[in-house]
Amino acid sequence: MKLIEISNCEICQNGTKVFQNFSWSFNHGEVWLILGSNNGKKNIFIKALEESSIKKNSNLTFEFVPIENGIFSNTFTDSLEIVSLEKAASLIEQERINDESEFIEGGIDIGRTARVFISEVLSDDKSKSFELAKKLETYPEVKLCGIEKVLDRGLKYLSTGEIRRTLLCRALLSGKKLILLSDPFAGLDVDSRKLLLEFFDKIASKQGNGFPFILLSMERYTEIPSSVTHVLEFTKDEISFCGTKNEFEKILDNRKELQKKESEQKRREFLSELKSVQNEYSEIKFFNYQNFDSLVKMNNVTVRWGDNTVLDNLSWELKPLEHTLIRGPNGSGKTTLLELITGDNMQVFSNNVSIFDRRRGTGETIWELKEKMGIVSYRLHLEYRMLGGIDIEAVILSGFHDSIGLYQSRSQVEQILVKKWLNLAGFAGREKENFQNLSYGEQRAILILRAAVKCPPLLILDEPCHGLDEENRRMVLDLLEIIASTGTTTLLHVTHEVDEVLPCEKNIIQLLPGQKPMYKLINL
Image (cartoon, rainbow, N blue to C red; front, side, top):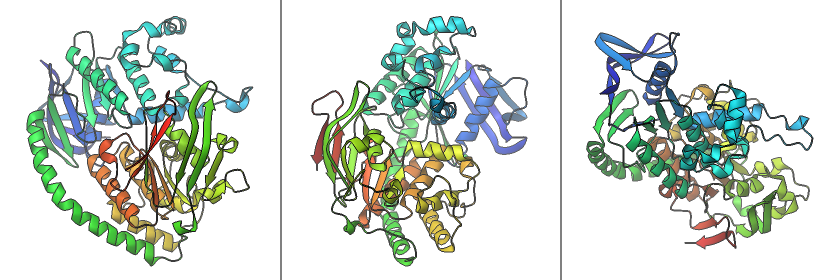
């Protein structure tokens, strides 16, 4: 039985053809994985699928148009729910826009809780949904997603894994017949991944029997649920594979062998170009890491939120060129630890924390600290997504001035330097493109260039490859390794991905929530 049939169709955007001769079908009993690069046509296909499933009798921005006896049929009209990084980011953006802390006694507006957010899909009757919300702990979907303990927490305060599982739970309870999960494993710790993999396989085995059908969309082929049977892969402007998972894995083996041979040559070229960038422009203010005995030093640092202890008696020192990995489960305090360093957590002043050989709270300004740092984080990404109307060049140039947005004139020397970085990263000639028009992964890649452009003594990377496709992820990891090898910048790196740990990262901070002590320092 065909659930979706697309045969000999064009995909059009506002009436203009952007993909031709497209054919694909989704049959009962199949579990499809949709792969594609950030700058490819996968996202256009998903947008067309979303609009054709959600909108009815309306003007579509993206649509499938049959040609020459073509067919388009979709049994999921008005019954598709998408769970994605974009949806999560938009949700948090909206919560921040609606924040009324400045008007509330005590100064804290937690916004909608996960309980309220999920209950919104339970009934159109607000009073009824309010009553149902009280019983959410009893719902099997809530237990399946493992969010019982965060139901009464504000959405703004949920970790990456928690907000993703909350969106999944809401989608399951929405009554929609088709759920498309877009990069569901990005940014999740080992336990959350295991939970989500089990969730996916359970739903996939029951799809159509009281449970929704599932489509999985990912930027790269990693940790694929065992229930996946077929793969549809987009490579830029074309479909590069459509068939069974077993056939696709044979092709992947051949690709990896070729990529391995090309990797070393690319690394040598990157290193040569990057060194020329650093040496060519003396007008740019680059800091020398040798000016500091230590970049970060913490003595018995404790951070609490109410009764919840996030960090407890943490003592640790980061010396120049001791590239360090921070790891731990979602909600273990990794982002809190980074925010103590970047100045985004005010509890730094009640603790013994020194940054660049100077104790916090002794007169230094936040700008004096941040001019020596490059930062990539989910919070920073949200800030730039909310700006609007800023081009790629301006985003990277703002890294010289540590601002969210660019408020200085564009010097010719800085513009030349930005072009060199864009060339290094595969964005040559795109400096005037609008940042908002880029895919989520491309935006993250540009923010990494923003952080690295001034070659700071300390480069702070909070899940830097979050949302990147395989091509951009590999480029970013190679670039970070090369930056580390130049001997000018120290990396402080958070990731859950085992294959994203860089060879240069010989020092590890392992956070252990609920244990005593709550951390362990490891030197490889």
